[in-house]
Image 1 (tube, one colour):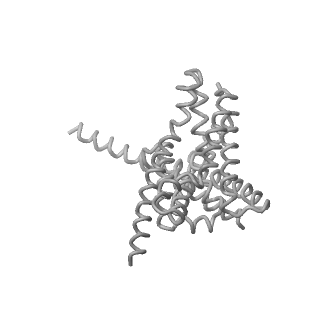
Image 2: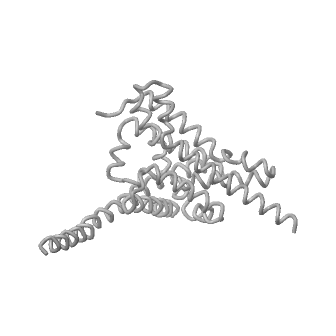
Image 3: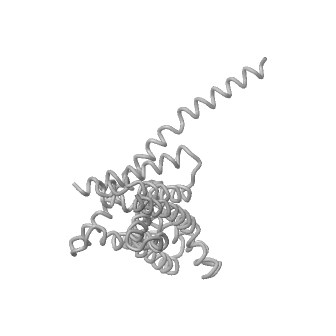
Length: 116
Length: 156
């Protein structure tokens, strides 16, 4: 059941992205920036947490989940440390994904060459 | 008179083309994005469940899951497979975090010949840079609002 919900929620988020790409002149870079920001706003409003409970990885794997991870970290740190948390929380829940992206991104770029 | 008729014809033609041509493509693209994006998230759910089975909470498992998906996205981009998926999946391959990894590896590989600093190092952040800038700025503004709200609540 949780796999089906992940499929449906994740698929729906991607479908919205595709509709924006097809019906507007937004490029994939614009979509990623838009989605990560919308995810942060929805997280701030307390809506995204409910989507994560519903869809699990279907809500955390799309880039909207990255925005949610940043905002949830900021909120946790504000609760624990006050104003300092506004800055210290930004990479609290995202540090592992970001470190992995930079490291694996670099290694793969060195190991492989573009096709054709 | 003749030109006027021609313009009407052209406008009608344009309108008909616009009305008829993109629709099936949009529907097909959206379905493909839904299916492939959904499948990538289902795979992510499998990875998440695996880390949870090791005794992690959902929140603890989110980071390792993201890392595995980022690795897969970067690796498949290196192999050239991810771009093939992207041709049929569109946003279905862009929006998941695997697509974020793809957006780093793809230009970095492409511009390797420009050197390791201005080529690989800089180009990796061609898309990831803007994503980080706007997600960080948005989140900090939201954090300031949240902090002020908490202060206000504490005073009441």
